[in-house]
Image 1 (cartoon, helix red, strand yellow):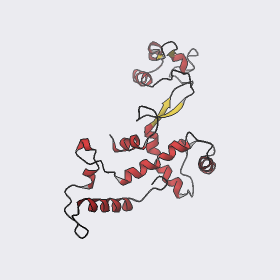
Image 2: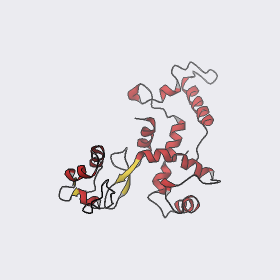
Image 3: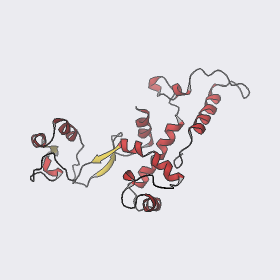
Length: 203
């Protein structure tokens, strides 16, 4: 499930087998299904039993490749996929391509969830303001170096109010490191299957 996108039919068949195992009273009788599978997949706080929706969990596991391909650009799988599918770009901008392998189709199918969950942590990047002002070319020009906070008065002169509030909500690096992709749903900034599944389930 980490490498291949399973069909909906197969996932539902497995869920049906799991439901029968839960509700039947013995090996020969199916028993009464007191709750639907969709109800059982709800979180315990919502009255369910936190069982996995296998279709969604399959997509979640496929996103694990994101954690391997993005930071480890020199590993063999990343080199092979980059040479074949995105030689002039990166994983997040790659197209499905022509005659893709089933592994690539599977990994690529989870890209929407990856895009939803990741974001940038600003370090030394540049910004393109609405109105050009040569005094403010770098992101660092919009930040107080001493307190590592946004220069609100400067931002509101360059951007719309809605943009300013979004800019001020971006976490800032306190050690001057380069821009980096981080996983937003988790406070640590690191990808995890648990946080990804919760994101897909809308938790």
